[in-house]
Length: 614
Ligand SMILES: *[C@@H]1O[C@H](CO)[C@@H](O)[C@H](O)[C@H]1NC(C)=O
Ligand SMILES: *[C@@H]1O[C@H](CO)[C@@H](O)[C@H](O)[C@H]1NC(C)=O
Ligand SMILES: *[C@@H]1O[C@H](CO)[C@@H](O)[C@H](O)[C@H]1NC(C)=O
Ligand SMILES: *[C@@H]1O[C@H](CO)[C@@H](O)[C@H](O)[C@H]1NC(C)=O
Ligand SMILES: *[C@@H]1O[C@H](CO)[C@@H](O)[C@H](O)[C@H]1NC(C)=O
Ligand SMILES: *[C@@H]1O[C@H](CO)[C@@H](O)[C@H](O)[C@H]1NC(C)=O
Ligand SMILES: *[C@@H]1O[C@H](CO)[C@@H](O)[C@H](O)[C@H]1NC(C)=O
Ligand SMILES: *[C@@H]1O[C@H](CO)[C@@H](O)[C@H](O)[C@H]1NC(C)=O
Ligand SMILES: *[C@@H]1O[C@H](CO)[C@@H](O)[C@H](O)[C@H]1NC(C)=O
Ligand SMILES: *[C@@H]1O[C@H](CO)[C@@H](O)[C@H](O)[C@H]1NC(C)=O
Ligand SMILES: [Cu+2]
Image 1 (cartoon, rainbow, N blue to C red):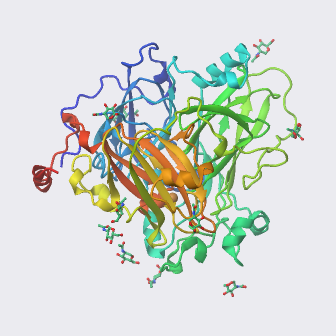
Image 2 (image 1 turned 90 degrees about the vertical axis):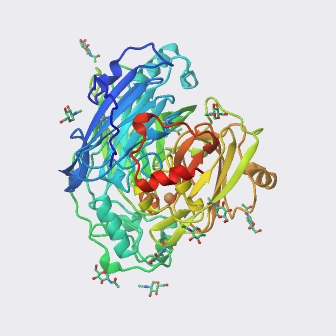
Image 3 (image 1 turned 135 degrees about the vertical axis):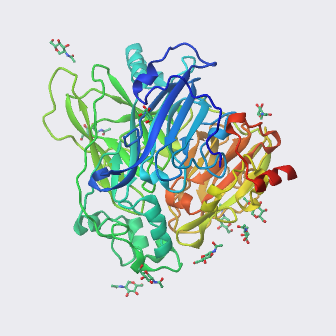
């Protein structure tokens, strides 16, 4: 089978994946420079957080190396799959305008890259800001294939820094900090590999809602907090779910909790150690950031590649100015902590105005699912003057709640720096998508049925759109506007971070209660206060409200501008693997011709399908 496209000239110069790749000529924009990267993927023994297991290493590294680009760059990203497993790579948040074959989704845009073969992804960095790349085959993101991407905005794009300080010197310092923005990949890790986990879910009939450690740039430790501490920090909302139960020794909601797992058949004897309990402490490395303290500000890109945890992040004694979300500039907001759902990115500026020394970076899971905590360090070293004498003062506790007078970012207060009014658009389609468990505790739906994992091995929809069942595809026409309503049908469900591939969407509103309407316009008549059409958030990842006691809804709107097959899904990995996904066949009336080098070598059956037309 011809998975590897033949006859495709590989770029002559393959830079290695280091930040020096960023040092290419400045100046050329719209036409772009071509920047080439190469990842050699291997399936190796590793000890994330001191846990021995197999992981995916990229050029021998975990997390995968960061990419630095300039807006307008043409990217060539070569994946050499040296693993005994098929894989694909997705560029999260990158819109893939005009290159739907490079989106990296098996079953939609390509076939999985078989062991021993290669695939060259080619796309243009039309967006700017913070993104990341990750494996998109089955649950493989959990196995460690993820790396940061920073696309430096074109000079012509206005930054919101003057809203932080009017001083020209400060603004220059912020601009410099942005060009050197430090990626912070936040994630979680399990003892089990993604396939062991999937098999365990099937055997136990339970949704594996917990992890074993939080990681900051791949580093961390497994901490067993002890029952007394866990009981002390158990929240009111957790008690509501727990009833007379307690959290397990890994801080997890127990597997026999009816509210958290639903009334589905299960076999608790099939639960492997560490999935819900049996905490085994281990010590791994501690991440340390060394921002350039000769500059007055540092910029960080906070990126959540977590598979299940919702991570609250803070740096002791250093409030953050959040200035971009999912790559788009916002009106800066000052906060001491930020809660980051799976797949979301926040770019922040931090003023380096404290004595030199170490400041603790804290991460805490703030989902109901688990109490779990980790730390890293931020160190100013290249700075004269007094040094810090005391341990730094935390602004969040071990469950991510702000301490003292500290504040967390209020997600609803975010306003785009360049807002777009979507009041007047003509909405061609409104689709109500039910989010709930489907037939088992660990399988989920977004719409009418569960998106089957097996479809990843099928003929990709971009090539064979007529093979997609109406149950898990949605066809749209190019140039039209589409409203999607997520109907979180019942409790208990965590917030679902909805991620849309291709272009970003507008978050119109969300609220508690059952969605009773046929359109956003109708709903807005009844509850105008629940909607924002004038300056909605522009996101590629945005979470529904938690459904702790009843149903809720979220409404988003998007413009179909990029013909191709793009996935819409929950970014909690176990929900995605469990089928909470929908294939958007966007602009199906204007699908592009697929370039020669991306054509599949067809099976006979597929060839017949194609002749049938659609
Ligand atoms: C990837 O592997 C190839 C073949 O072994 C080697 O030539 C190349 O240098 C490797 N690339 C990186 C970035 O390590
Ligand atoms: C906990 O509650 C359940 C259901 O209400 C009940 O069956 C069980 O006996 C209770 N257990 C204890 C230890 O109180
Ligand atoms: C439950 O799991 C155990 C351990 O894997 C297995 O031996 C047993 O057969 C399972 N029970 C059922 C009813 O499937
Ligand atoms: C610290 O002070 C020394 C001596 O004045 C100077 O040479 C050096 O450049 C200073 N370093 C920094 C980081 O300011
Ligand atoms: C918050 O508390 C700190 C330490 O107690 C204090 O220095 C600071 O002024 C307080 N800030 C506000 C806004 O109250
Ligand atoms: C529902 O789950 C059962 C096992 O609990 C399985 O046999 C059946 O195939 C599932 N049905 C669907 C539609 O997934
Ligand atoms: C499609 O959805 C309907 C309604 O939920 C269901 O009865 C049917 O089995 C589904 N078909 C497939 C192929 O999943
Ligand atoms: C779900 O099924 C209903 C009724 O058959 C249909 O109108 C709707 O388009 C389907 N939704 C999706 C996303 O398939
Ligand atoms: C799709 O629609 C967008 C927005 O109307 C337009 O800019 C673009 O040219 C269209 N693409 C094609 C292939 O027609
Ligand atoms: C939908 O209708 C029910 C019953 O009238 C009401 O309780 C609920 O609040 C309504 N939901 C919304 C979102 O307005
Ligand atoms: Cu979800």
